[in-house]
Image 1: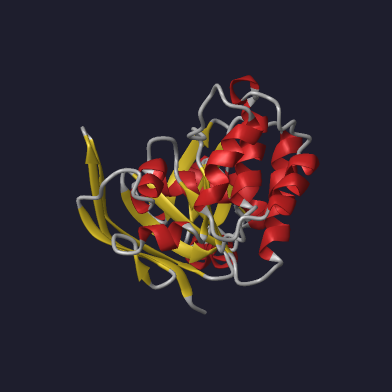
Image 2: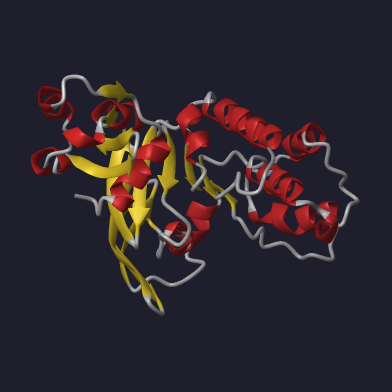
Length: 286
């Protein structure tokens, strides 16, 4: 499987925050979730990859091409959905489209009209009158109307109601069914990725914590519930983090077999992505 994006040694600083030698790759044919809490570095990473802000060091390759030397060619093959939209507020949807469409060699007016109808968007409506959900739908209509090979989306479901989020996930699944595509989807709403992600990359405080296939990751970790009185010092070391109450404890671990050996009566449950993310953050990535 070829990599559709390869990043190595990426650095970028903003005041007290910095990306620290960020490195990862996106395989073709995957929906890759880019997870982390707000402020972890997701948006900074995406903006740096797209050269919306300058990197201080590192190498970025899309489709085997260096981003610095082939920016125009690469962006012609990308569909980009950013949280802030980057639209001219006083223009109508049709006027904004007329500015954006000529930048793409494979622009399809038919596809654009199809998505506008699907999303119930009025071409005459002004951008500054759109709700957050409508803005996201409009950005997605633009991104999907020029045969993009990779969709890059920054927090696309943040602030959206459950129905709109469900519609978006369905569209991404249909997009991937065409083959030869990829989606890079940053979010802190990890329940969306439980449904559609193939690969997960986690960033925390500007550093990559892990890159792993979702199913492998979910098979590696387990949530353990038991009597707090059973928590010996040696047992505590087996957990990434532990939450204790007067009624018992809940912890997350990667050392399932050893925990079961030491605590045979414990209740073992499969985690959600959010459990794994928070476990790594609160546990100091140990």
